[in-house]
Amino acid sequence: MKTTPFTEKHIMLGAKMHEFAGYNMPIEYSGIIDEHLTVCQSVGVFDVSHMGEFWVKGPQALAFLQKITSNNVAALAPGKIQYTCFPNEEGGIVDDLLVYQYEPEKYMLVVNAANIEKDWNWCVSHNTEGAELENSSDNIAQLAVQGPKAVLALQKLTDIDLASIPYYTFKVGTFAGEENVIISNTGYTGAGGFELYFYPSVADRIWKAVFEAGEEYGIKPIGLGARDTLRLEMGFCLYGNDLDDTTSPIEAGLGWITKFVEGKDFINRPMLEKQKTEGITRKLVGFEMVDRGIPRHGYELVNAEGEQVGVVTSGTMSPTRKIGIGMGYVKPEYSKVGTEICIDMRGRKLKAVVVKPPFRK
Image 1: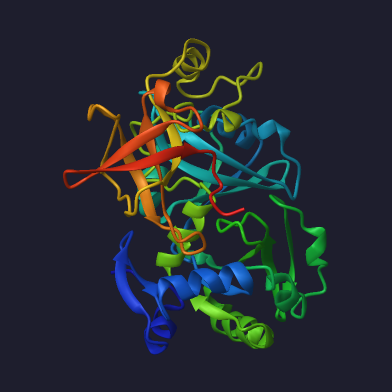
Image 2: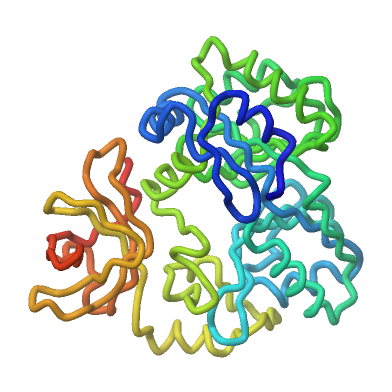
């Protein structure tokens, strides 16, 4: 298994470790519920060094990104970030990702850990524009410091005014005495906070500085288990569960990152445009359990007559709401907020109701 610069720290701190995307990663430390509530109420630190980072540079960078991603990269300016996806030729999604614009001809793509090799091969094989591509995934470490007290803790470590970094923007500067640290605000938890990107060689110093700065706020290391429950309470999609090579961005409710602007001829635009105008056969929805039960990935969604109308893609017991919550694809006629559906849990049909995420207000 691959390791991150922090793997030994996780083990030393007693984390439950497990393979994720080929990496030996911490799943939980003090327990998922405790870690989840720590992030909601104070501040927690996620090791997300397993994520992938690609540089796209040169005069052809924009043309390449406009073709390979669904969102309108031309709308970016230096210091801005965009959520987007790589559409494939069949109407599905190769991956969802973030695009950071450093300069007019320099971008950083942040991709999912499980898809680094797949995404890199996709980019290289579709680079007919001749953009300069560089896979820096092994040369960049990342911590996500999340929670309402994150800004108070991290402000001690930099002269950059963190309050001046709005959602989906970033700055580059000195942090904890280290230069060229990227400080961004994209948050996958809905609890506020920042992502820090830096060279692996300074990882130990940054980890130590962050935990010292956050000590008075009860800072804790957080595992991937709570990362999943936090993102699900916000209704954020997870690739491999809610998105994959067969789910289109229109079906997944990601029409807002699928821009049919003039001159942007991205991969499979005609099919996605057709879906937007003519409709789709399934739609990703959020739902809350009415009956007691925990929905899980792969469970069937059925109507009152017991006919299958969809499938659960993500589900958990909400640590803040104390009820079962989930997301899944359903036939469009069952997608309206307030619609009653049932989850088939090993033959038991448990009632749920379609709601509009986020589940945690």
